[in-house]
Length: 428
Image 1 (cartoon, rainbow, N blue to C red):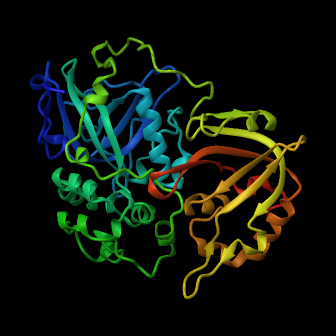
Image 2 (tube, one colour):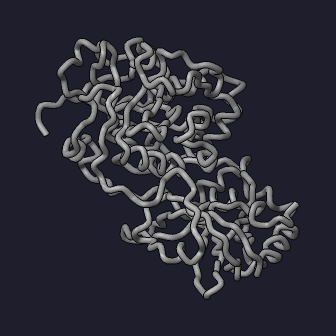
């Protein structure tokens, strides 16, 4: 595409004034903290709220011209109420809302407690989710608003990729981290540790013994440093399912916008106009629970089912693989580990599905724990509760996930989204 400009803004505060953007096709790449994602049923678009902790008084949110249902207050780390001038609203097409929420949910198991369709539960600012965005910035009604082009989560997996780190370094990630570390408290630090290499920038003891330490961009090239004091690191040291791997190709170095421009941009329409959706619609609703009889769910093709759509059904839990006594293993000189789990689900007419648990986060969520060590005092009780489930009728929620295999292949599977406490009423 020709005729566009990539701005060299180091932060949101350095974006041009609205008048300078009028009639221009301008894009910018920025590291940000994601604060909220809202898409109400009456909206044919979504709104992502972000901050990089710099002030920009001309944003549509600061000037009161953004969507009226957006959250009024954001808290993160040491900040109880983030100033409106430090919050930036970004409009997202529906297909980007779905992809973005999928990645946000993979960032942390706690993201499943939030809901972009519910304005009372769309604010996840306290999670401190760090992302890297490419947006178009444009003038609207004397204010500046953003339109999402690309979105990446800055998690431990992504930040081991050389091309991704080169992009971050080029777009002033070190300066962003200097501002971010200034608001990190112990609670936010602990929340970030399993998903983001915060320990490469600051050690826990530094939170109380030192002031803000300027992070160097060179830290982007360092491997996350292991810490022996926290079992939370098990979550990122042994991952079974992560974000789909992306090849480190040259086009990551300079974002390309051709694919986005192939779609008509609704940004030229007045904000009150309802934008028609031309893309094919799935019969299954995302971000809500689709309740189906078990035979109907068995007829849903995993290859055709949309990713991260949730289904609820009632069936019989016929078996658990591996057998219950072999779920908890302790490798030589290492901490205890929980094996990937497959629940064999059957119906009254011999239909069969597997509900699977592969990632550490999903397994921990199933057992209602944050760290693997938490299950140690109640292993025997847990095993008995699992064994009692075999042969019983259960109500279970399933969600399509993709498992990364060798050579870039991905295998779809049904992930179990119901915790053990909900499967087994006998659980104390």
